[in-house]
Image (cartoon, rainbow, N blue to C red; front, side, top):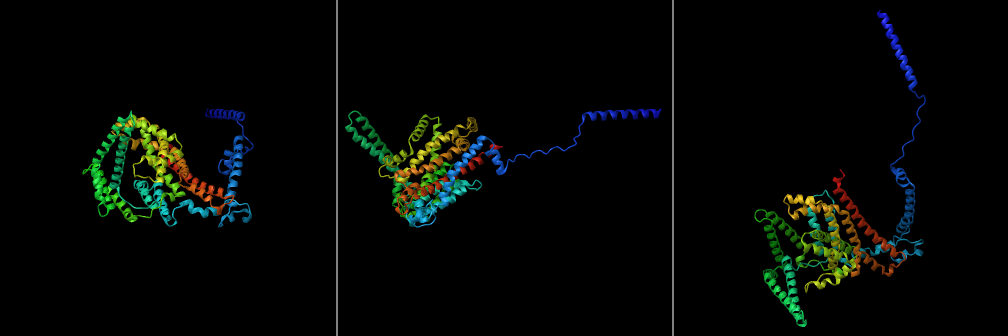
Length: 527
């Protein structure tokens, strides 16, 4: 019976296997040949990939690529040929840049640039004193480069030296002269001059009132009020004037004035920062700063007359371009920040003044501002107080650029959520701490492209100072064209190409660094 059962099981298994084989034979397919190879993927990297994916991947891109190649061919190739291939590199006068002497088509006349290079950099600055310009450039580079490298420490000290110390040292290096007084004497003289102007204005109004039949009494009262106001101010200024007289009568007025200024400023900082409890750090910092100032005064001999005076009318070339642009850029930032905050102020008088100031300066061209600052600004200063011609242009450019910076910064302020200000207020922070620590850093981060764009525009607009007899780089270039010993058909194009390369180098450098700063500050947003 067991044998019969085993046979039945075997028969059943063989039947199941045969059914499975028949089912597989009807459903399965076994390929007898290899599958054909697929084509290789299109290369998307390297030069070939660039051509396939960017330049020739569509009819529109093909047309744009061909047009760009033709544009480069008709612009870059002739420029390279003019500046390098057909250029004349050596020579002593115009004859070297003439085609009949060179034996070929003459391109750029670089001997002209070599002969006038000092004029392009220094203008008419005395040759024996040009080391002072070189030293100023070196100091500026030594202080600017560490300031631009984010990883280097002591940014606060570096910024203080660059924005405060360098301008003062550069003024005495470039202009020369010494100190006739320090803080106390200068402040006393300035306030006394303004007070005298008030008294003089009051006296003139009182005299004019006798010839005006209707408004005469009003003008007389206003004049008498100004005279009385000047008298009251003179009593208030009497201690300062007395101290000034004592300083002028001392053996060394400069150092006596320096010591009095250091003492007054240090004591004020000491008491304003908490006095005996918390004011010692401010006192030590103030004394250290004045010690450094005293060391600079002694080394440069400012108490003994200083360096020979070089009038700003002799300055020119790249020196004037950098002075005007750097001072304009640096001075316009605090003006723009103050105006932007003032335009958003809740105090009507401050808001109206800021709006009027911004709209006025933005409504007039820069040439008008330069003419106004050069020829009309002296009419608004006290009697006996003169302003240098270059300083007038600097003031006008700073105010003009500040109005534009204000609108750029105001756009950044509007991008800050109101909730951050409310949160800072809830934490007990004052308005100034909220603005300085929370609002303004974020606002400036948002408007870096706009600020740098304004800086670049201002750097190029400095060429307009030649209108008011300040010979910047382009002004010196035009003056160099008047030299008949370098009068050739290509001299004009060579000079403008040279100055164009200088402007491009500075503007392109500012643009690239702004992109680096923007990328570094916004690195957290990529996460």
